[in-house]
Amino acid sequence: MIKVSIIGSGNVAQHLIAAFAKSNEVELLQVFARKKESITHLLDSDKIITDKNNLAEADLIIIAVSDHAIATVSSGINLKNQLVVHTSGGVAINDLDDKNRKGVFYPLQSFSKNKAVDFKSIPICLEAENPTDYQLLHKLAKTISDTVYPINTNQRKALHVAAVFTNNFVNHLYQIGSDICNENQVPFEILKPLIQETASKIMLLSPEEAQTGPAKRQDITTIENHIAFLSDENQKDIYNLLTQSIQDDAQKL
Amino acid sequence: MIKVSIIGSGNVAQHLIAAFAKSNEVELLQVFARKKESITHLLDSDKIITDKNNLAEADLIIIAVSDHAIATVSSGINLKNQLVVHTSGGVAINDLDDKNRKGVFYPLQSFSKNKAVDFKSIPICLEAENPTDYQLLHKLAKTISDTVYPINTNQRKALHVAAVFTNNFVNHLYQIGSDICNENQVPFEILKPLIQETASKIMLLSPEEAQTGPAKRQDITTIENHIAFLSDENQKDIYNLLTQSIQDDAQKL
Image (cartoon, rainbow over all chains, first blue to last red; front, top):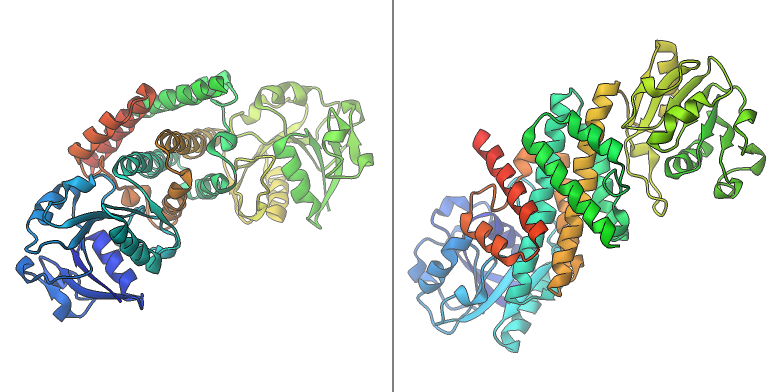
């Protein structure tokens, strides 16, 4: 049994608690939450601590809090030579306090409170300072996920930026699509199969092979019609910039 | 049986031929192709014509050619008072020649030659000049798809622009994500579950509810780190513009 404690009670912490609870190889020792009630639906209340000084030694302590709080929380841990990891894509391993052994346990997914996720398919990106700690992290990650990768701090930063493009920005383009539909009395539902297909396609084709549309085929007439159709200046700017970017890519081929 | 002829042998034409071939209620009368060989794998060669003057009367003639060729092809049809429709999201119904009855049969999907699609889940957007023609189009569309919508020329234009945002531009963001991964020796595979989840999420949540990330939560430190990390000016511009757009949306709430 791997003895794990978690500091935090937000989205990532809650999804990890639920995932570890299902594993026979993990013993969830303690969870620190500022408000006990926030996680009593997920585990026995005697395992929830609200005073960080009560944190006990464990095989692994996972800090699952906001990026900006990670350094402070890690230096506030009243223990030494423990393996302490954070779960963030955007924070370096060295932001953790020196008095404990450092690591990263970064599940690459966008967690929402109102939507369950299948942890098995979530890639977990790991980093540690020494092979023994890495092996422990790997063993733990494998109990909840099928895909585990060694990813150093620089690679993780790249992944985090790439995730902003492929998740946050993509969702914002869905938002713009939805806005355009609403403004023109068209149900956004009509676009959903296309959105699904767009995501499915790149499971089989590279994004380069999957690229279609007026920008890719240099269809200037359609591009001009679209720009004339858009009345929102911000939508126009985004249309122009992304069209130009696709055209530039096409010329590189 | 609805007697249908198709003009064209490209992507949309081929997917329609394959879909109609499976339907018991549709008789595929003739298909015009400039090169017979391009579609002999899809239907009997005696149904393929290469001279437009051999086009016979049918319940419906579908023009499935490039947008810019639709008007010319429709005026080149040597028949009168037929129902002639095009399949384009970007072309008005009135671009079709006056000597025949006009309509639109627009399947809203991005078709690739190398990827089969399940037509049942593809929305088909219909427009016709009179109720009788509309009913025929509706009956035909229902033989291959579960979702059929009446969509006029202006609504179709909106859908087409929205589809560029949610399909072409989204795929380009996948491309940028893939480029960032490649430049930093990270397998793009790691991002694929996130990409799937991003698309799945909006089946349950609105894009507004699904929006996450540094821009949405006004996390200036992370945004600045990301911009500093990006070395490509074009990627920086796209990052800045989309981040600003998400922030502006968040302030409207």
